Length: 186
Image (cartoon, rainbow, N blue to C red; front, side, top):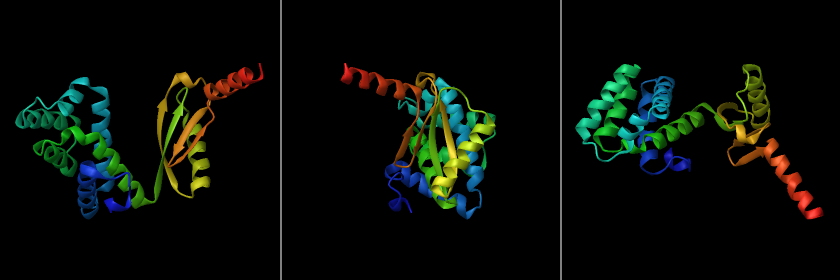
């Protein structure tokens, strides 16, 4: 399956594929995705955890001990915890973010979903998120999961990346195009 999807390749693709196949056999695909999402959130929130994951200075056993404590505290157990410990034992924990991304791609393909990267100036309400999901579903014919990032520098509007397509309706882009048009005219 990994060979079919260009976004799932290399070391991270092989690990993600192995995890996906195991989770599919155990019928725990959604639980593993939820656990990996939780771990990724912890990773994004903690500079210390990020250092533990990325730094080659930590010995494998020290890294494993620290990771076990983090997983226990976060309530991540079962297949997900075992998998993260295998990554650690194999000295591949530095690739965990890529493995999580590849796993999500495999789950999305398995479920017939698409994922859109959405950048907005301020957090969207649930009503607006639902409207955006519905609009993207009507375009793609698939359920669309949204990865929403807030970036005040776009001033207003939104930027949507879905697969190889991108729609930039941000106010920043519109103002820049007006500025360029004025330069050309003057």
